[in-house]
Length: 339
Length: 147
Length: 118
Image (cartoon, rainbow over the protein chains, first blue to last red):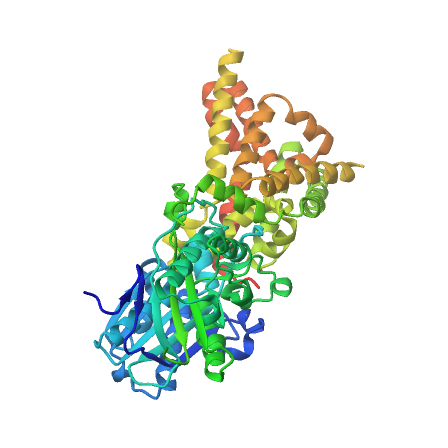
């Protein structure tokens, strides 16, 4: 009998692990956005002194990991597991980033939902008593994602209104059995929900039902009310997906509108930065969480938040073959107090 | 959410999508496309004046415009024009050059054979396939009609 | 007047492309392919030639003009060489442009590196 499982899809930790440090690195465009003061490092150049975009992304992730370990005042040897993932084929950014660190490593793929996927699994490892210190990290890069999923950078095409801007950024967090919070108290793991959207330029709409499903399930499993949270924040539903998720949740009688935000909307200034629907990518919720959310939790502006990273699990191959886009969302409750 | 009806959902999503500003986009496409064609006319007239006949002049114009399109792509200007102009800079032959140079540049780091050379025609290749293919079919049909 | 006609015809052809892209989910690659094929077919039907006579570069510079050269070349090839001309004619008449695209494309790719969009 699983003692920590509550409801259908939720885990309630007995000894909630603490997030003892984070680190965030973002690209120049994100560094001009409304959250700029929260990021630890803002790159001056997207290439980060490397000779390819892929190497730049990997370096960003590696540096974010090392910085998070340093901020936690730990030695690299004290990290018992690394859980990391990214958007590139065969998650090369992550595997190459951890190559230097020489620590046990699980590579994850959950598309843009990877940040909460790694936080979920990391917390389970710590609460399960398998490790004391686990490093969770993800990254994405506009230029690497663009060439893999869309068109060459210099092609003179127009981006549709529904399209989103892949965030150049990396976020890392150290989860520990010892620490004074913020704590990860609950984890609701999402199912794949596929509403049949085939337009790869409208991922927000493809992921919104998955986010709504996970959030509704979370409330059902935990018995929480909307009032129990200061903030519910989805990963990258952005301008199109956010209102849809809000309405879908409202159909179940839950009104989250007053405390609901989306990382993809927060990270850019939609009017000034011409990002169309908003930000996306693993690095979007990772950098917003590791930068903005963690710091505001520490300061006490927020006391309990629900972070719901959302992923679109398609590939260029599946899209060309006319497959619809399956969505997924994982929710993590991060709280300053253990309830 | 699994009982979601994908047809209804698509309809619902479509009602949420802001409509593109057709008028503004078309004006931009018209002006930029028009300007590129006018430049083409100037170049054609120049070649005709220096003594090339109509067909050679047209070929020389195409070569010149392709060079301009390729150069503007290389120095990173063509995508900025394209962001505003849309079809205005995609449809002219300079856009064809852009579609060749941009993937070739993009994949340079994967090497000069599997990168530059192999990716060069990833967008323009289909244009040649359908262009060549249809013209050959037209030629064959013409042959049997006129025979 | 010649320039104005080129401007108007070229601009209008581009507007058709823009309406196709905004109104449907067609990508630039789809637009390029449809325009070349449309140029070939319209030329074969005898519709494009008058447009070229009226608009000059306005009709030859857009990709439909590439299709026009292909079809015209194929027909000319058939007249000169019979069935073999159907294969050689179109490509002969566009060989300059394609060769230029290959060479310049390669050179530019070697010289320049793509920059991140902002």
